Image (tube, rainbow, N blue to C red; front, side, top):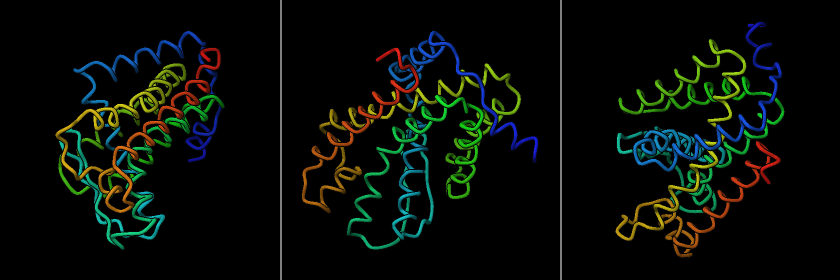
Length: 232
């Protein structure tokens, strides 16, 4: 355990600016390409539902389960008051969670803690796994956590840094896209998080979508400036 703890806390050298920018470009291609976006979005959905779950618990709701589906959608089930500030904050947390996690990842990487980031993600996925209530969700979390765990344990330090930077870029770049898709979907069902918040607050759903999109774009700018200071 002492050896593992030492590995987690140890600082790794920050990659060159060229490597950082290349990982960013690869992440951008993965987010934009139709063939890879569903896989990236599955990871975003895991973080999205984790955001609902974490904030739901913090505001006093009782978490009963998380379900992840093959169409990259998900649902977090909590019990508590159906109205009030806590419910609003919990609903808003989902779309904001990937960008916030990406920003936190950028800060860790700028300090040279790529292995700590990878192990932190493994720990997060283990916690999520405890609450997943369907088979596909279990498999999705196991595959994602297993891949990150293998890299954090067996890969060389420079390889670990590249993967950690790729994950951070993916979170930052992917966070705005679901909101853009939601804004562009004129036939969406009125059960999305912003629509539920609109019913609770009497503020139009499009306003909440734009505000969350602006927050994610701001996080992307700050995160990009943290990962690649020369870029800005």
